[in-house]
Image (cartoon, rainbow, N blue to C red; front, side, top):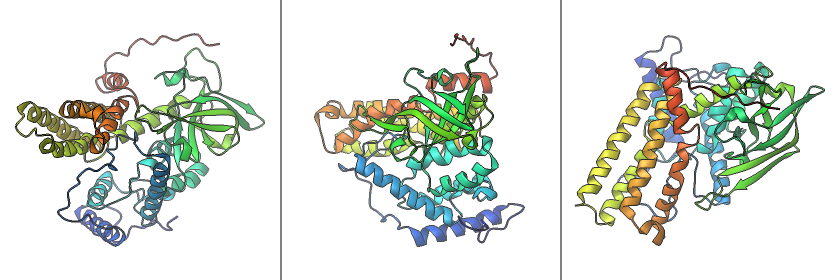
Length: 416
């Protein structure tokens, strides 16, 4: 932990332009002494080892994925120890307690450097953190939150189940209280980074109820505990970013319960809002990175004079800019509006993959080398429309919570 958490060179209290300027100087000093700048004039030409990241769906062999987690944790520790690891978080839990514009400034400054990708830590420092901060005990907040934001603990999310589809209230995993300790039994699926995780955020049923959203309870599960089995799930791009997790009599102390017994759905909603905001957050739309690479493809494929390709790329550029500007506008007011960002960006990635496929044609399946990167991108992009809630779920959220339209009728099935 980093001591008094006092910002260096930044006046606390009433925050103004001077404070932001001083913070920028502090950030620049930290980055310049810690990281190398990219070489000026060197383009990002793709080679066979390049990866276009699609929200955690990656084409890394297992050893490379493990190395990426180690690098992410090491960089996060450096940021945290410099008081830059959780800029907007509460000071008493290891944060800096500064407004969102300070975090945006840091992200902008850091983007000028070659930094390790901290995506492997996102579930812990975003979703688990939001759940613990909103519903955890003071003990969990003081012990777990700093460890998550320093990268000392890697987190995963144990929500989806094999037979529940996209209905998180249909979970069948159960938790039974025995002498102050909960015993968890069940299965979870599509769990990102479970093979590297130390802590899992797990929703389980603790009581039968007519309303499926009642009788659920949230727990923090030690992923190294007896009874936890992680089985990799092979994706259609040949790699395993997700896992099937089996919970066979896993013991969880009641002190690692989040929220009241039977009130786990409130924790689910807090977590999903954070997840959707995380998918839609950032100055640059992820489809924008793909667009940059697609522009490199144009001369290589002899498409400079193809008016249809130019039209497709111009349309994608406009959509990417709309998503970026919408994200910047909504960051100051988190909430259901995060679904707008998530919807924009997932659809933009899908559109980018479609345009890339049109440009490459048969090369997508008949060529290797550089083009293999695009094959992986096209195979992975549809998954973004599922993670963090499907497009249909996002549209329902916007209709009901933003526009105030009547809720769809919910059919409550009988449960034994």
